[in-house]
Amino acid sequence: GATDLDYDLDGSELAKITSNGMEVGGASVGHITVNGITEANSNSISGTVTIAAGRDNSQVTFATAATTFNALAVQADNGILVQVDVTADVGVLTLDGDSDNDTTGDGSDKIAFSGGRTLTSEGAMTLDATSGGIVRSGSATMTLKADGGVTISDSFSSTVSGQALHINADTGNDGTGTFTIASTKSLDSNNGVLSITAADIQVQGNINSGTA
Image (cartoon, rainbow, N blue to C red; front, side, top):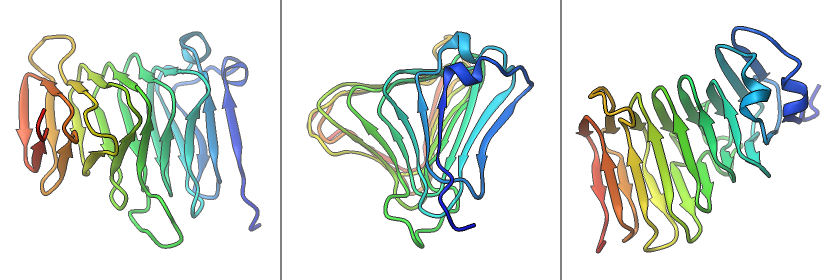
């Protein structure tokens, strides 16, 4: 039917599931809220958990309390709202805030970080939002940490001036984690201190820390 199919994912449900990978949502699913998934809740899912809000104008929101999965891929038609810390403690962490790469019927299409967020992954971290870009708000430091590299696939901006952004793409110090900003895209800290640690840095677009 035409009714939104909204879903709240919490730890008590997830802890009852054992599998090698899992998909929550899909092409016809509306808004999804992820609330306080702990390491103990998600450890029985050994592969990648895919969360998909594919219905037109639908979003995925991480809210209330921090969330941890072994590996996580998130796809949303009209944006991902990250209001708490998110961790992938075994594998990749991928956020795609514009899964259809199309603005039709959508008002956001971005990855929106609020406050002093920390994103952590043991594998590669990828942030992608083709139409709306990646936007952080709030007066607090933001941190991206990955052992397998950090890729910023679309322009990343800050709405509040002077807020620090720390990126470590090689947390294991093993010489394998590359930081990449994609071609024609920009990373702008809006006059905030910007630090990047990586085994290699691939600046295919541009980086601007302003007066910091």
